[in-house]
Amino acid sequence: MSYFPLLILGATFVLSSARAAPTCVVEGRVTLPTSDSAPVVQQRYEIVSKEGVVATNPPRAVVYVEGPFPREESPRTVQLAQKDLAFIPSLLPIQTGTRVEFPNYDDTFHNVFSFSPAKRFDLGRYRPTDLPVPSQVFDLPGLVTLRCEIHQHMRALILVLESPYFVVTDANGNYRLEGVPPGTRVLKAWISSKATRARTVEIEGAGPLRVDFP
Amino acid sequence: MRCLLVLLVVLLTLPTRAEDQPTWREALTEALTVSAPNGAWKAQVSGAVTLEAYRGHQGNPGLVFSESDPFIHPRLTLFLDAELGRELYAFVQARVDRGFDPGADPMGVRLDEYALRYTPQGRGISVQIGQFATVIGNWVARHDVWQNPFVGAPLPYEYLTGAYDERAPSGLQDLGPGAGVDEYAYLPVVWGPSYATGISLSGRKGGIEYAVELKNAGPSSRPDAWPITEVGFSHPAFSARLAYRPDLRLKLGLSYSDSTYLLPSAARTLPSGRRFSDYRQRLFSQEFSYEWRHLQVWAEAFHSSFDVPGGSARTTAGYVESRYKVTPQLFLALRWNRQTFSTIDAGASRARWGVNTTRYDLAAVYRFTPDSQFKAQVTSNRPSGDTSEVGVAYAVQYCLRF
Image (tube, rainbow over all chains, first blue to last red; front, side, top):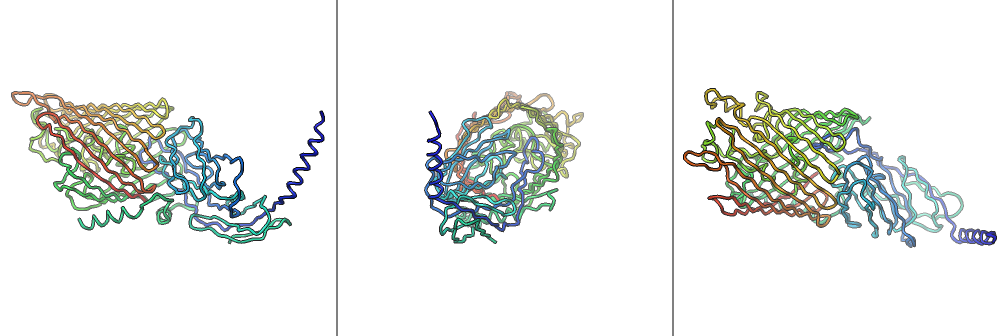
């Protein structure tokens, strides 16, 4: 049996779908805060100090198209790991309904918890070998602050959005957001819990649109 | 008193619901952190404001030296943590309160801990020098106000025996209550975290943890003896701990300590021909801990002897403690404590040199935010023998850390 007719049919479907929902690119730069103070690891009663200075990610921002947009039929699963006594990444944007796994790659216990109204949970103490990897589904939009009960300096943020169109800037604030549906959209740059900037933009299909957040 | 009550109300109403990091907390942390532009060093000041209230503490064998009932004890604790390059770590703990053990003293500033730790890269060992907590046992790791699920310490760390440090007893019959010494001179098996001054070497190799320390005062010594300015190294105390962790969840350990329990000022009271080495405290302890998910369990058993001319007075003390996290914000903790004393010759008869006691502690901890919590504790104390009345004590504590 020849698969050629099926391939033609599939290609036609993809092309027609693309034509029905053209997507655009938005790019630009977010001015990030200069603060980059790394926490001091408190280990007064440790048997042996953890060697070296714990690295933290420099400040970054999340650029996203304000929703709501319909949720994906099959919600995604993403990971936010604990490695070298730090959350990696320290800033994670997700769409509502996403499941986040919290693997432990250190040779010690971690205890991820959140008191944030958008998601209140406590995973308890778990080892790197504990399976299945502890996870949570984030159903409500908002900012979730993650901490580790054992390692006070550990901190991470999950930004739960009603939008699948988001991207994290690089350390210089540059971003490139692809696949944005055209139209009049509110583009937001989340910089910190105290600072979110917004711009209403007309997104069209002709080339990348540059939007800066000074 | 009125000011303290106002402070308590203010503290309790500040963070009334669990929420994200308050902006004042973020700003404060940032303001209290300094670092070199090239990252060669960084330092951070942090702390905790604590307000405790005790009721019925006369029935509580804890180290509360006050006649007031209820007794209210405010405390400000300040920490300085510093990383100097990749191998040096230093910390300082200072407190503003009415004494290390709550008492009737006026408010004052005290330096409780300071230490410099050297951790050569890749060796798995640390050397630490300064005034810092003992290496003995497993309670020290959770003794600070935020980690400790109870307001007070386990019984072996605060229940006074019949041994004392301000003068040399002439024999076993001199031990016990009624020896004519100040109440504060009586010693527990281990005095809280025992922040004596000295040097320690600790390390980890696979599942084995080890630590040895040489301090200026032994584990039962009281806070007055810990600073090097008060008690020198004329009678050093040796302590060691060995622990095995077959699995991250489980830890088994042994500790040993050998020291004199007398203060140097007791030299003038030594009987003729006697030396400080005739007044030794030997301590041997076993420990167990288990933690997984929302449950933590700790247990320790101490066997200690206090030598006097003509014999040794022995005591055995232990506890089993557990903490369970019911919700992300609510913990419950339960502790069973027991201490027994050997019998000694007391004139024509034999008597125990301390009061055997069993104590139950029940506590609930509620965390309003990741940095503020409230504890409530009920203690039932059941001494045996002639004083076999049940004493119930209550304690509450509010802590706001920054």
